[in-house]
Image: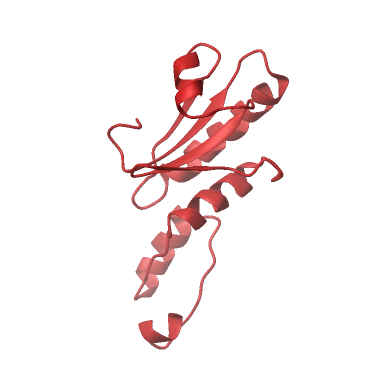
Length: 130
């Protein structure tokens, strides 16, 4: 996953951790939502207890930890943020600049069907959106 995609999101967890056990169902929803993105964002999960070399390489100190990998750079979901699927999806979308321009009502309908959490801005020209 990390080697083949320029953008991917990964949950590092430990099966013995109650916080990880709570995060796994939330992460499944994140995967479902990001699969609807255009283009989809690959989502994975790694048992950091089973693969200590991966835990060390990616500097995982706490379980669970969410990291977003963009090209060769890693971003860590803030520990102080509540770990809900909506917060995780929004955080990922903010860092990947997931803006989309639609030019007609058919494109808008398709966009809203694929993106249940969307912020829509109406601008007279692309220059106005800057």
